[in-house]
Length: 378
Image (cartoon, rainbow, N blue to C red; front, side, top):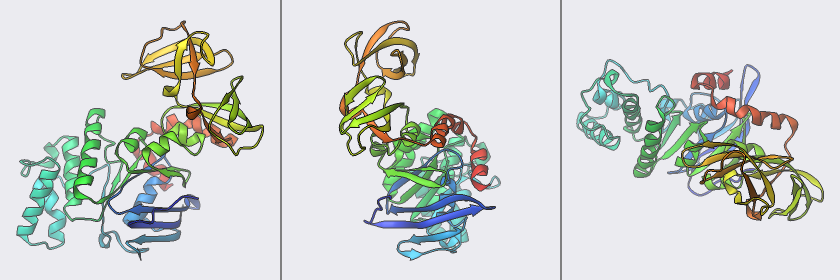
């Protein structure tokens, strides 16, 4: 179902299933990750993304399936024998050691000579912008600085892969965005594979070469950030990756879809005549015109300023649309709305259970990381 990356593959998961206490957490997933690639596992709490990360790290054994690293099967290989290091949300730094000693710790365990240790620690602290902090106690560092120490400690052992499990979850929004840029810079500079877990859609789109969208222990879609955003495989992915208008429609024939009382041209075919479908339109894709000059015309019901755009709810009579605009439209004003065929995305209709799940996505994103980890292990 999912196209695998065959060039330069470093990690391969084949038909991986995991059960905890009889409950299936992963259901026969397969995934290839290339060398030097930044891949993000994205999905709501309980979808199996953290479990997938832990399988690669050696912290969880699959119930079924095989794990390959650089072409060799590594099922059962303990974490310390894998060329992989992990950065958790709780950085697990040693409070009785200073910054230098924390970063050096793994090298001492591996009996690396002192001169080489000193060289590597110095390089890593420069890489994470902590030069001059060598003697600082970790308890006296900010959250962002502690995170940098944890990254330096993980990278100083020169792993082939760095696993990052919600590492920015404890940081405030501004620092989070700064660290997204820093992590991408570090990954490109070191040219190693990063596998990142998050439920934050913006984070996934900002940093990743490829995004793996997961739900209920399955992989729904794998693709570049632009592919995932512009060509979601279904309404669930479309709604999870950004905001969308998801509208009941009928595919009257190839390239023509009826929704909200209008039949409009689109670019999709192969659905069959009069097939019920989901029509997905991104709020920013509407063209705004004067009242009476659009394919749809309606009243602006509400307007919220979002910093870079205005989010409008437009009542078009028998339906309400979410519309993003750069110019403010006062509530009560009338506007026209039009959409070009390229921006009308047609999806196979979701089942009732899937539709109900869409309403729970916002609640999922409000769960704490502790609740998320617990839900994946239950």
